[in-house]
Image (cartoon, rainbow, N blue to C red; front, side):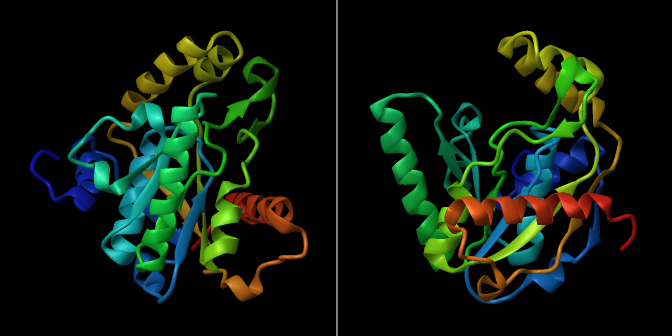
Length: 232
């Protein structure tokens, strides 16, 4: 991945790890549509699905911006593509988040797609790793941007999950969860990552009477419904 152009870095990183991106459903060439475009996805892996969503955005439009946890905002070379979200309860974090929101709106206005994991955290199994798999609660941030920019939405569902040890650790201690999240990347080496991409959802087709909360619930349901898709 070293020396790759910034938008292509993520696909190169996948290739270097032997991870093939398998895209079912709507293909990237069918997403080259005009106007603001927001990709939303479930978040089962933490890092690999982020790389894959970036590569999907690149294939669709050639450029993208991705909202990501401020802890992952480290690579200054890639900084123009990254819009950090800081969950710290500080004034500095609030200012940074306002700035990221402004940059996100500017990108959408310029026709640059925005990639968002509305959960903001990795999918986890309840009951110490033995319950059903679920995203963390989706925030209404994506819905707010969609409403403000009248964006078309592309729902994406990544198939799979991290190993059981990660799920168990998630109920014990946050530092252990983070350590195993990084370890999980190694478990994806030389294995495909499969994503099902839904049909574009024009802004005019979205249910708006429930406000941000209602739209968020609707988009969550549409995204997870793609998880039941078994064919192209």
